[in-house]
Length: 316
Image 1: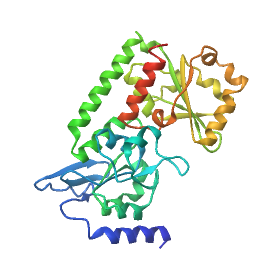
Image 2: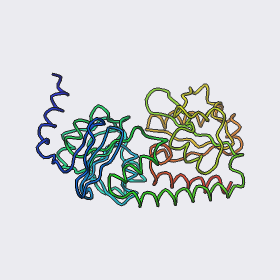
Image 3: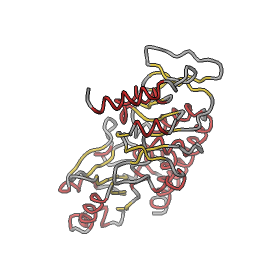
Image 4: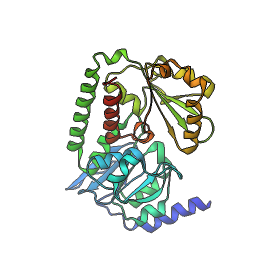
């Protein structure tokens, strides 16, 4: 048995006795029978029974952190995006002082167990291999994926917290705002809004498609996208620096994820290649905060993007 498997087994054994019959998880072939005062949450890994209102919540992705904070819940534990990238600045002041239990996709089971959570929120795309161990620590609810499904994930997380009506109101307010901002420009469908992001490590540049968090926010406000960012089946398209002309748009919002990515972006912005882009010559290329445009994956971030759109687009 590998060291990592022994670690998982040890954690599961340590917390197994603390998992009560009144609050637990079952797989898709073992439907849970709700007892009085319990809620049965259907999710990507089956069904989870939750009693009462969770008080010690651990969240294992940026979208889940955004979601619980939007509902007034401060988690006892969370992950940071990467080892050298801390919690998103736009959430840090709202989050309080949660214990950092690892990075996205690499949560530390022992640290989670030590927090004695009564609910864990994540997704298959991030932590599928840890679900069984996590569900022995506390009732665990998983979304299928992250990004373009942020609204569905928000409602799922809210259901697990017993706050679905509040989440529905948050989304209704968001949709009203998005529509209002779109209307202020007259015909948002006539404006092709592009998004470009430099990624730390290597030379990766991404153009984010409709099927992404930022793609859904732009669509909700009624904006169009460049032809090469209309894909619904992929989150982003990779390009090289030599292909940066593919980022042309009527408006271009761009950012960098991590320090090394920011350095490469700065080099591009200082180059003649960048200055030759029509969107740059027209003064329509705008740097935006990466944490809320691309890392957010939740309603707080989505509303901050709407703020930016109102400032940069509606007043253009």
